Image 1 (cartoon, helix red, strand yellow):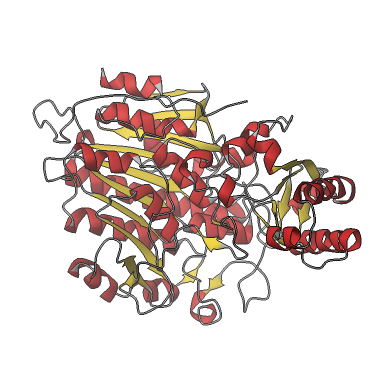
Image 2 (cartoon, rainbow, N blue to C red; image 1 turned 45 degrees about the horizontal axis):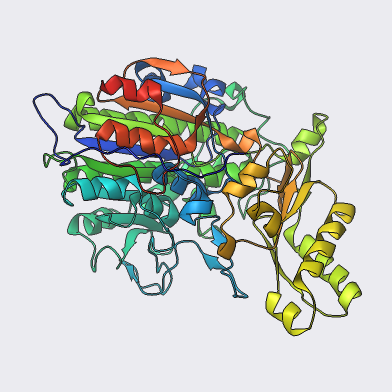
Length: 544
């Protein structure tokens, strides 16, 4: 079992200032996360990618082809945080997108903080900050090492995709608000949006894209890496009869308020905003190493709705390839390839639709969290004569109503153990049911026990963990889902490009906690104190 019992510390003296003669440091680091991108999406669509996007990173950079996460669950907030902290949820605290704090009966969102308010929005929501993150990030360490002169900015359609990578000490993090169709931020960072952000918002680019019909880039019969466009395994937009091309956004936009997110044009908007950020924040031009964290979220939204075997997902990745090509070209022309360090990876991968897998002879299935919660409560009512002893089935975890159990004179451990036995015997599709105590003590006796151990943060996790069987997902008959400790969710691409990075590839195992210490070694700064990864030798050797 992998036990995070040590911290890997590298100590350097670093001012953060780039030496323009020897170029010992890059002027700008661009961290790119493609939300929900499995490793196989690179070889799968290889023959259709342009020469200047994914192929450019592969052909001119270094490809770590065997990079995997080592925690459960494989969700957005968890993956982004792992990349930038070099550690697992058991240490950094970001154990899910939502969780229930110890002693509470309601769940909270990972980036919520009511001490702050949205900036650029009149909404009472979007009160966001990185305060639930319990360790520093590599971006924090860069700011500290430079005497706070390095700029760090996070960008994503999803707030959590920009907030946690940018860390506690970021200059800014921006995310997209669907209601206003604007990029907004939080008073954690500033009290008013910079004028260049207001000017970008005034361009009303979302309206432009929402008035566009989404059709395939290529003739639809050329999408041979995907299932036929018209199939039974995909969700459809509200207002459509079938989930097929063309998708008439001008007709659909009023019935689908988050339509831009669920389209490849959300990635276009993100790329355009990233380029404006480089330009107006003058990233890479101060003499200090700056850091831009960019997460492309629309691949995840499209992937959830249509699944990884859909024409929609394939088209989204062909378009993502062009967005990447635009961004690389802009960075190269603005600062020079030799001055910009780029890495690209994903926060998690994805499982194919289980109903489709069944047609291929694979055992697969769907859990419905309400059904499991209701079933457990019905069982506990029969056992103890009390209602609602289970609060939620969330993140594949049972959160019991501890207060009600204890005030009712029941023994908590007995309730937990009986519930475990009930799930094992009566709930199909499980591959291990563990108590929090077993996980905490490393007593799961499971092939995937280390994943649960690494993902366990006691005050934010449930009383019972349920590991699904392979190819079982939660709450979806159509579309796709992720979250498991299986390779189809953990195996992601990891590419390095620019600055001093040479050409090459490796199939040696890499843990995703290794990204941050690799960046620290390249930049000559300390990794965050909670970091448990090790520098990737093949990458840091370029800096010798």
